[in-house]
Length: 99
Image (cartoon, rainbow, N blue to C red; front, top):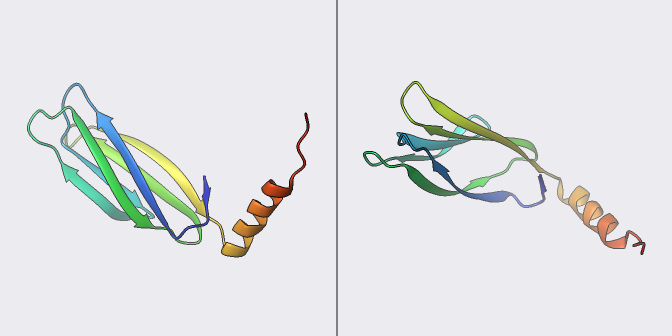
């Protein structure tokens, strides 16, 4: 996904029928979110806002059921330089449409 803003808000939820230990989010190897679960909690929601560096930003969401078992989801958010983002917007807006 490509963004031209310097911040991004990530919202979501994780579910495990066996219960959750915690959820954490890493952006470019830096922890930006952590939330521990209550005893036997099977669903957790999260929301976090973080800064984006120019270029690719690696985002890792980790939901742990136990210290040894976790599920992971990775996404990459590309922050385009302002001039490039304006060119991309202009190109899309001025593209001819066909019917």
